[in-house]
Image (cartoon, rainbow, N blue to C red; front, side, top):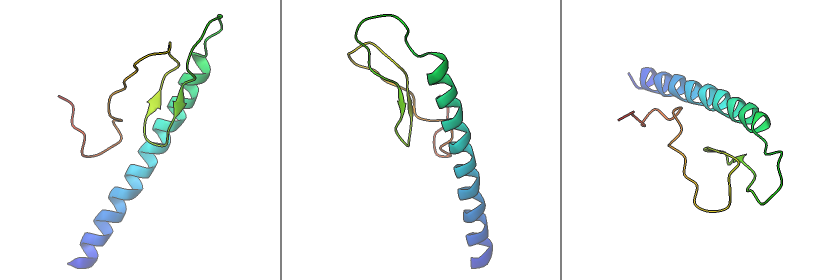
Length: 75
């Protein structure tokens, strides 16, 4: 029984790692495609090991919780 639990947890972790990797790759592509080309001040977008932050004007920026986290539900 304990082995089944450990196996299920390992499977969930593998799935989480895979989905986070996809999220990071999509973030990198998005940031490259949307890099500001004009003049003026802006904050560089980044992937901070958790969430993808877009390039933005200085000020307050927010992003939703990443969808790869299994405990985050929409709505």
